[in-house]
Amino acid sequence: MNRHKKVKDAIVRTIQFLRNNKDDDIELEVRVGQYTSENEFISGYTAEHQKLVSRMIKRFQKSCEMNGERWRAESEKPISMMRSEYEKGIRMTSIPNRPTKYDMKQRIINLDIMTDRQFHLRTSLSKENKVDTATENACKTQEPKSIRLMQRMTFYETVPGYGDFPTVVFAFDITKVSGNGRTKIESTKGDASYHCELELKTKLLPLEDKAKEASQDSLIGDMIIARARALLGTSYMDGASGILRPLPPPELILINKDLN
Image (cartoon, rainbow, N blue to C red; front, side, top):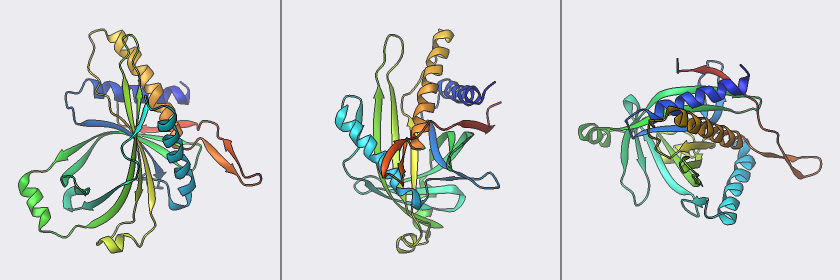
């Protein structure tokens, strides 16, 4: 079995798990990051890759301008956020003019995918579990373990359905994330990183026709892989000529999976 087929088969099985799970709150997402020597995944591009991220944002903005039926941006400017971390993995997310949210992120499945680039991919099924009122009130009386400030831009791509194939919606989140700090001021002193994430927004339902379901899942798997590759960059600046040149698609290698 070649490397691409192993990656696709694992992603298709993740799609099948999502489709057959009755919990509407489970998300399928792909993130860019790096693996440490202990195989810990650290999300995001480092600060020195800001130009790559800027090119990605411009590419999405141009798609919105050129093909408004298929692409749209959540907002013209980045949305400011604050994320506070408490004990036991509890998170508080604050966005101006929106209700403050307390939750716990639960990872259900992780697929670790190495590439032939400096940065790699992690595909996850996860769920944001709301905390109860008592826990939320307790957090309000505590100092957070850490605070991060964020600026996020979100772009939505709608792939039209045809025949029996459903319309598929993807979200691309590009988030500038400050360093960790005990206070807002302290968090601004560290280096920022740039978190790039792809999320499948369409709710897939089980089909009676399993052959049709398998065909849909295979095509959606191809869509996810193509868009995940694009998050790793599609071009580079040739230093000698100053010309932006295309990059070949990165090689993907599945290094471990939670699915049996």
